[in-house]
Amino acid sequence: MKTTIYTLLFSMVCLYIFSSCNTEESKVTTCDQNGIGEQYQFYRNILTEAVKLSDCETIQDYSEEAITFISENQNCIIIYLVLQEGNNIDDEQTANKIINEMKVDIINIQYSCEIDNLPSSQ
Image (cartoon, rainbow, N blue to C red):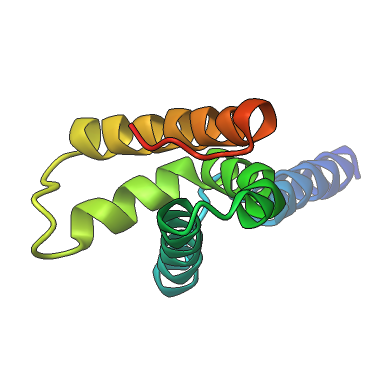
């Protein structure tokens, strides 16, 4: 009888451990390369065009949103940039540098619009 109870308890513990392992969520995130790439290009294009046209209203409308998007998706954007052919970005370090420079440029242009009401590109 004791053996049966111990076997039953052991089986229940094993079942609990096994089920806990299966329900644990993965900490690995995936990147939607098409979606991330399209959104990155959207912000890049709209802000570049706004600077060309000295359109501070558009710059003010999209700057914070763009910086938030870039910051929240920086790792996926790095992957996107490295995987793109023909852009001379071959490694994570180069992509990260470009992304960080882009964020600084957006902040500077936004500040220029706030102070001078005229974007100045670096």
